[in-house]
Structure formats: structure tokens, C-alpha cells
Length: 98
Image (cartoon, rainbow, N blue to C red; front, side, top):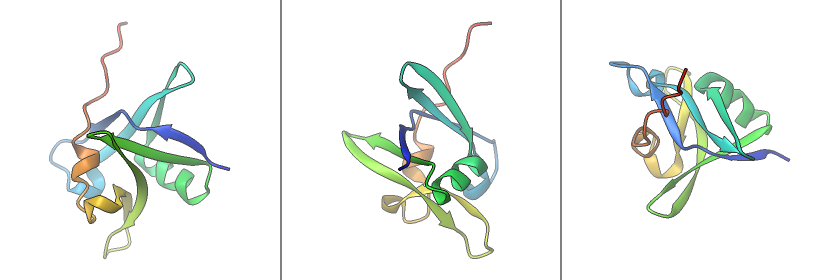
């Protein structure tokens, strides 16, 4: 059974197209911070190791693997219709004090 993680932030690459724009996703789980690359998150979803969701206006949305016409894969929600607007609307990661 997959571990369910709430995605609270997204680290994005500047100027990249949508499928390459999400670099990292992250949040908190059992009091610890977690951070996964978008590529690893796709692999984890496909392997059913982790399941991810975001919360928008109190409404949970599961992250899914979105396959583009060229075969590349990225993250999105069913509600995004492949555009990623809900995922990309999440805040950037919090700053960590050194």
C-alpha cells in the first residue's frame, strides 16, 4: 500500500515548459520534511510506493503521472487537464536557516 503524502510546495525551474518545470515537490510527514524530485515522484507513483495529493480551496486532488505526446512524463492532477495549473500554483519551498 502506498504511503500518502500531501504536497505543500513545488520547486520550479525558470522558463521551462510545463513538463520540465516541476523540479522538486515536498511537504511534511510525521513531523519531518520530505523532498522528492519530479522524476522520482513519477517512479514512486508508478511503483505504488507513494501517492501524492494537493489541497486547493479545501478540495484534495491526487497527483497523477501525465504522459505528453512526445512520451515524456510529468506530474499533474485530473483537474488540470494536463496543464498543471493546480500543482504550479503551490508555493515555493520554505527557506531553511543555515
